[in-house]
View 1 (cartoon, helix red, strand yellow):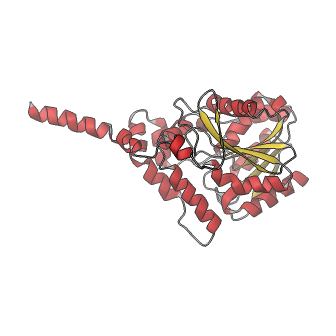
View 2 (cartoon, rainbow, N blue to C red; view 1 turned 90 degrees about the vertical axis):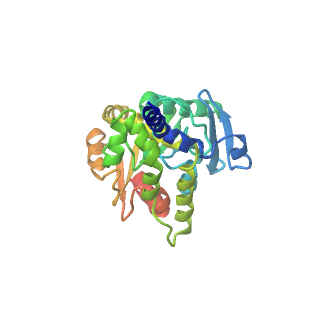
View 3 (cartoon, rainbow, N blue to C red; view 1 turned 180 degrees about the vertical axis):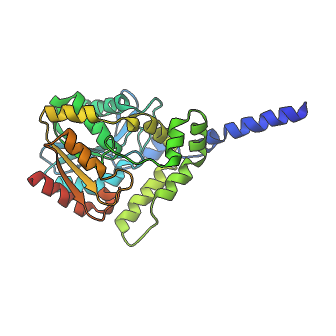
Length: 307
């Protein structure tokens, strides 16, 4: 009988290990936010961290980061947009950076609500240019298709929602309820850290990579990433892109030549869905191009905008 009790207790302990590991991570609250760069908006779902960068005047561009990269990794891209004359609004998605780790399925509705709330909070009067990287590209695409009157242009960088490659670990965790949650909670942090390149001679890139490591040490981050993979990142946005094409909303898409996550087949698919989309490729860059090759990324954007 005692053996059975010990076995049950051991299994219960193993089951709650991911929860225990998450509780040991940094909680994002008033203390963590004190002295941080940026401002904080209490929106309908939770607190969102945001910053205004770029030009003091000019049209507004809203820059949306990726699934595991907080907004600090988008600063170089934001400054590049500022050089093009944009006032740039960057913000942390829920569960990333200094925004709240809001519970709930992180699907398209979840993220477009946060974006709509933030635009209303900041009283942005005019239609904006939406700029999305990775998962941020999916959010921007969905918002533009749902609210075309609030968008003047769509800029996509290595955007999700078109053609992406998924490894076995990610696929298993995304597709497998309960057990997938446990495996992701136990090993997801180690797996994601291993995918971040080691430090090299590029100081700016090293700082961005340190920010990614820090982001994985915050409470709720792994839960948010898995929820996004099961939610918005499981969506193929062909219908939305075709709608945007029919509305004649200008689209620019920038891809990375060496990207192993968002493959270059996305370029051909987007061309089929939207023949008017202007597309460019950043040579020798990988998926991290906005912060690994910022100058080349902005150069490709300038070329696409001229085209």
